[in-house]
Length: 333
Image (tube, rainbow, N blue to C red):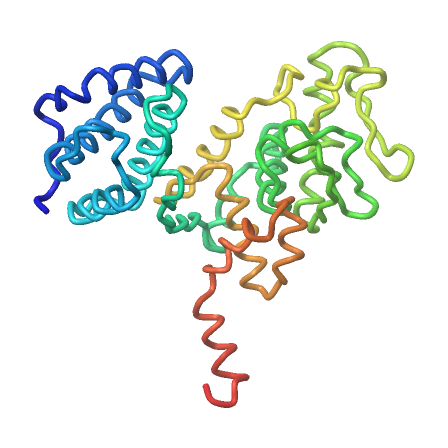
């Protein structure tokens, strides 16, 4: 079979009307972007060219699973990435499902075609030294510096998501037992331990700096204290937004972009050349725990992952450590 060429010529006339119907369908029913629609049109158009020119079919009802497998072999021969091939399969599946829906064919030969496994992209992480450099960058003698230090310590010390951090409420802090009560995805709660550096930084912010920021919002926002059960109470009778742990100098909640800017500010100040963003602290948290010997289930619990498979992405982190352990303890290493 000759290699498939990019669609630079008209779609086979016999299939052109059907393709246009499909494009109109996904435009109206799926609400896709112009770029996505163009991708679908390109993928399905190239597929139809193959069906017509290479296989010699004139009726889409005659397409078999073997024909589609042959087409995928041609895509592989073009050195397309796994992601591109997966996108093509998805496009072809959707097209054949449309043909069935419109009673243009009786079966979907693409239904049982498996998507290729895509290698999971390993998360970027910071070294311990890089983390320490960023965490030591804020000037903790200033109110803003105390807040920023608490944010950075919290991100790395607990591994919580940015969304979990910005919505963190005062009554979710348990200083006496060293835990945060985190509300994660799907409103699922979990307790996350606070290491001593993070605990001290957050406590310093809450007790010494946050009251000044909270006063800017008006009312009695400056009062904080330890409530029942060792929790930290916030603004008496205030709205949930006023009870946020991390606020700006006007007493308002922080946004995701503010957190991003804080992280960027101190990573640039330390001269780290890596792309540093808030979520990299979560990756680094999990990576450094596993490097230190933590078990996967415990890391899963702290991260709030529903499935341990999600946590397993971090097991790439310390291949050298695994080799050392194997060499030291296996009798035939």
